[in-house]
Amino acid sequence: MPSARPNSKTRLARSLAVAVIALIPAACEGDGQAEKLDRMVAAEAQAADHNGDTAGAIRLYGALYDSNRTDVTVIEALARNLRRAGQAQNAWTLLAEAVTRLGPQPQPRLLVEKGKAEIALGRAELAVPTLQAAVAAAPGAAEPPATLAIAFDRLGRYDEAAVQYTTALGLNPDNADVLNNFALSRALSGRIDEGVELLRKAAAKPSASPRIRENLTFLESLRTRPQPPGPGAMPAPVVR
Image (cartoon, rainbow, N blue to C red):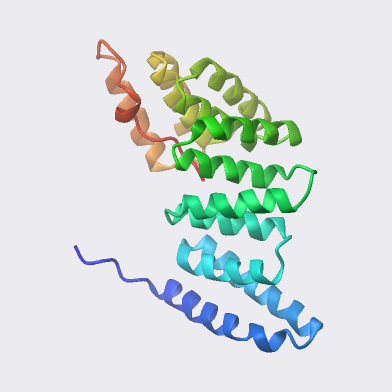
C-alpha cells in the first residue's frame, strides 16, 4: 500500500520548520534575536504537534531543546512526540537524563512522560515507582494517578489500578479517556458489567471519541461470553 501523502497544512508546517531552523545559527549572534526566534520556533512546534505532524514537531522541539535543555515544557513535548513516533527508547533516554540533570526537585510532568515511555517499552514494573513519584509530587493532578493505573493494569494488579482510576476521576470526573481506561480495567478483572456502565458514562461525555463508542459495543458483546478475554484480546487503553 502506498504511504499517505502529507496534506497541505503538514507540508506548509514542514517547510516553515526547515526555514525557521535554518535561521538559528544567525540568530545566536544576538540574544534578543535569539529569543524572538525561539518564540517563532515554539509557535511552529505547537502547530505541528496540534496537527499531528510528529516528525515536524520532533525537529522543532529538538531545535528548542538544543538551545535550552532546562525547559520542562519543551522536554515533555519532545519526549511525547518521540514516543508517538515509535521511539519510546529515545524518549526514555531523554527524560531519564533530564530528570537527573534538573536536580532533586521532582518534575511531575517529566515523570509522567517517563512512565508512559516505560509502559510503551513493556516495562510497567519500572513505570510504577516512576509514576508513584509523580503522584506524590503533584497530588492535585489527575494525569499521574490515571497513568499509574495503566501501569498496574499491565501488571494484572487491577484492584490497585481501580484505586488510582478512582483518584483520577475524583480530580477530573469528566475525563472520557480515564473512564474508558477504567472500564477496560474492570473488564479485564472480570467485572464486565461495571466496565459497560463506565463506558456508557464515557460515551456520553462531549469529549468521547468514536474509539470509546466502539469499545462500548465490544464490552457489551462480552456479556454473553462465559469468560472475560485475556489482555491481548482487549482494546488498548488511551494514552495521550
